[in-house]
Image (cartoon, each protein chain N blue to C red):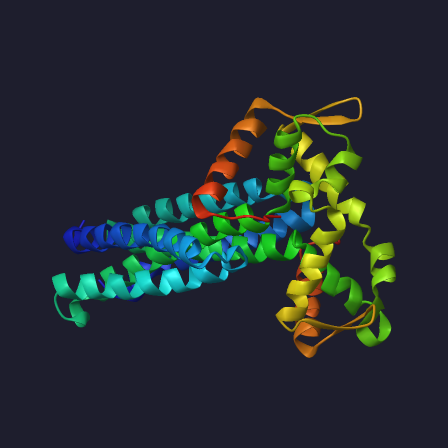
Amino acid sequence: MSILLLAAPALMALILFLGTHVLLWHVFVSDKGVLLLAKIAGGSYVVVAIGAYFLGIDGEHVWISIPLFSFCTLAYFHLYVGTFRSVSMRILEEIYRVPGHKMALADLERVFPKEFLFTSRLDILEEHRWFHKNGDRYACTSKGALFGKMILRIRTLYGIKNAG
Amino acid sequence: MSGAPQYLLAFFITLITAASIPALHISVLHIFQKPEKTVPWTFGCFLFSFVLWNALFFYTKDPIASALPALLSGYALLGFLWLGYMEMMFKIYRGFSHTLVTDVLRMQSATLTDITTNFAEGVGMDTMFDRRIETLKSTHFLTQQNDVLTLTSKGKNAARMGIFFKSFLKLGKGG
């Protein structure tokens, strides 16, 4: 079986995934999180794999199409999160919007308030139940505490200080 | 399903070599004590695992012509595992939300003011912002004269790409 034919389902699933993602992001979706993106990716592969089965394509393709599709999808996730959520990217974009592409630090602080970074992340963490809010105080839920302890253990294992 | 043994061999070698990535990474970080190199050094560890993968695969497998499908399969799986590992390490070292979780866990309960002033174990939000700007300067995305930041051509290209991507997907300003 040709290597191109073996890789074709991965490419078809990738096209279906990106097409569905762009369409949904334009038309329907307000929550543009990674979890939904992962569901679309998984669904796209399943649809293509079922299609390949009914078209009589040799099942050997799964050995190549699953890792290849997973690799391409994860690379796209990197691009998506790295662009959408990156503080550094937002700084570059804010400076780019100014004529001459120059900006004083004080002006940057005005258009991209540091506190916004915290409030927007805290809202997301609360929404996903990592934190709960009591009055004006935030605390970890049991899920958040478990996750936090795991991060601290990994940081210790790797000898990472000054994270963040 | 034909050809399963060669794919199983490729997957088995991938799992062995992928395990070398964290092992080497932990060793290097402890030996050189440079946590700021946490993410860049994952590239080096990946290259090591890639060389190891090829050495093991071609030691056990027939010439390249008959091994191409298994080769592609193994490369893709190794690449996937490395990307996942790099993402995890990036989040653990620089992840903003991850740091908020560990900070609040450490403080047990905190107001917004507590969180901003004690961000990253007491470093504070100003330093967090300054770190990002220092990284952008050291990677030549922008320059700084006195308190004025100027984009380099590399910075302009990255900003253009980011603005296009966000507007194309209607993502808002992000950050």
